[in-house]
Length: 200
Image 1: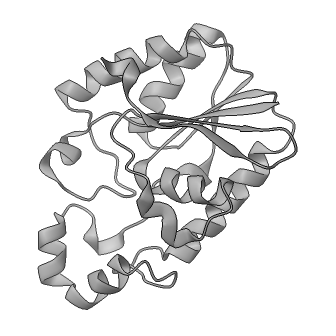
Image 2: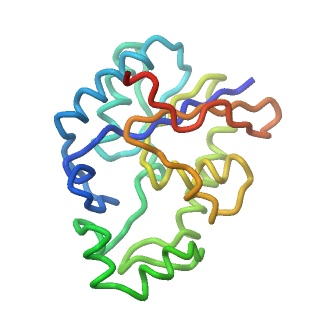
C-alpha cells in the first residue's frame, strides 16, 4: 500500500499579516519556527522512502531537516510550488478586492479559467497537480513525504480524490498541517485531513 504524508509549511510573516504569498519566498514567523520544529520532530519518527518538496524556502524548512534526520536527500519538485498569484502577491485579500474586483470575484467563484493579475489559473494549477499525482504513483517507495503549500496542496488533494478543482476550498490547510492518503491500486483515500495534533 502506498501512503503519502502531505504537509503544508509553517506560519510565515506574511501569513501573520494576511498577505498573499504565492511564488514569493517569505520568512517564517516566530510561531512558524516553533511549528516547523514540532513538525520535523513528528515526521522524523517515520521511515519515509522518499521526500518531495517545493523549491520555496518555507517548505524546504521542513523537508530538509527531516531528510537529514532520516538520511534522505529531498527531491525538489518545481510543480509543488505555490500558486502564482502574480500582481496579487504581497497584498491582503481586502486590498486585492479593491484593486481587482472583477478578477477576484471570478476567482472566488472557483472558475477553472479565473486568473490573478499575471498569475496562474486554477486549470493551470490542476495540470501541475496531475503531474504530481503521476509522479507519486511511480516507483518512489511505499511511504512518501510531500511538503508544499496551502493552495497547491488543496488542489492536489482534489486531484488525488478525483474531485472537481472547485472542491479545493473544502480543505482548510492550516499552517504545518498534515494530511495522509493511502492507495493500493492508484485509487486514493484520505485517512487524515488537515491535522495539527502534532503541534499540541
